[in-house]
Image (tube, rainbow, N blue to C red; front, side):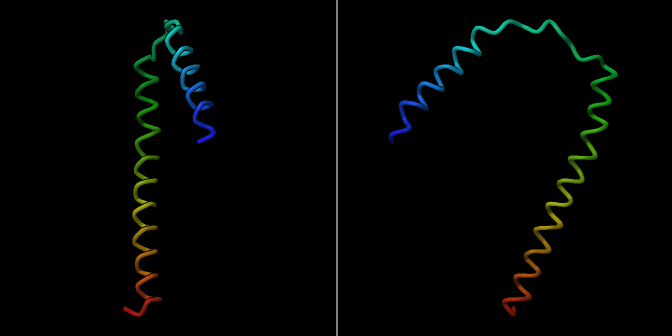
Length: 68
């Protein structure tokens, strides 16, 4: 509980800093946006498949070690 005042102070500073920011006046070019999507889509798929594969493998290992 001794960190509570520090957290409040940091939160207040972040809120104030974000409320006075100015717009960037920038945009993402349509081709750049499409490139980002083409890069992120397979990465997200690989991460999801790998996570699921890992979870299934760990479950099988635990069941095998438990003797079920």
